[in-house]
Length: 544
Image (cartoon, rainbow, N blue to C red):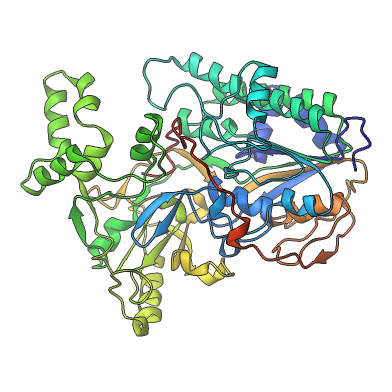
């Protein structure tokens, strides 16, 4: 517990997409001296992520210690029938690590952790990160304004959107480094202000740099140097007794193909198509309206989008309009007259209600069956569910690239990965890309295969580091899993972890006990309030 000196007992540093291959390259340029020193005086190992290994589901799994079947978040959006909305912390229906610590009178400071908006009310402070709004309601009330007064500026998102040609790459990287500095300064300020027992700070742009700049070595080095500098300052000023570093997944090149799952399912007779409606789940339309200041996490087609859908029904598509403008040298006006919402509603889309099975979003890594009795307009009778699922598994397992390699390393029923009260919200068939080198897409673009839309994306192995007081540096960390992080933190702090957690304390600390905590209920959810939500949410390209 805190003795009033301002020193942290236990610090968890989250580095999005950190992994050994990335660190090995950074060692060569001496770009992460503080992280390297932590590893050298402590211990490290690969940290196996979950399925699916993507930010909005993986970070909640890390901070709750349970699989998505127990906390209920499988991707960037939550589905209500065939409709969808961006996830918030209220979609995470299991207790977070810091709320359990609060029950033991242990205080926490949590900064920039994804999917923590709206924040829990605990003894300490929470400033939400990614997927929250630009000025998130933080806890306690008024603390964000206090931070901004103390450090000068604090933002969740960059001051530009991806693809903004008004900013040079150098200016964008300067913004990346500014965001890293803000995380460190805010965390150090709050630690001095609250003197917590537990601190958790997350750095996000270490992931985004790979998506936006395709793994550019120099840009990766820049953001990691800025992040490492902030970590060094946190270690010096906060003086934690023990330090853990964890990532939600790894990252690396996708050097093979993009496989368009819904094109395959259409040719196999599962997917039906339409022109019109909302289209596949995407950041683009939500991002645009939220940036405009609308208090929404949903998107509905407006007049222009509906007109685009009507035009497409008689053969006039946005892509044809855009191609004509480009041919006559008007590339600059394509974005103005063919905006993303128009492109979506005027293009061929999956007819969710009319299909037998489909991929909802590529980051879910799987296929959803349109089941009678579960889905609003289910097409597959309940008595045929297992047969249809087995048939999908068999057909997807046989898919090969044009080079004759298997597209999937594993195609299995969802129960192989998910268990808990929210399993029915998951896809029915899990389809894991072979070696995470095949890029999956949910889009309908006419062909099943093409080059990867993103040549760098997520890998299964992240990173775990432990150092400091009481850490067994000789412990065997083979098999370390994302679910083990929360129980390890609780064991380090000397309190029992929840018996609902799927992980257990890693042997770097003394084995912790488990106990029964009250189950999560809707009463535990925090009201989001009247804030403008996600008005500056960057388009990271995770959804299409």
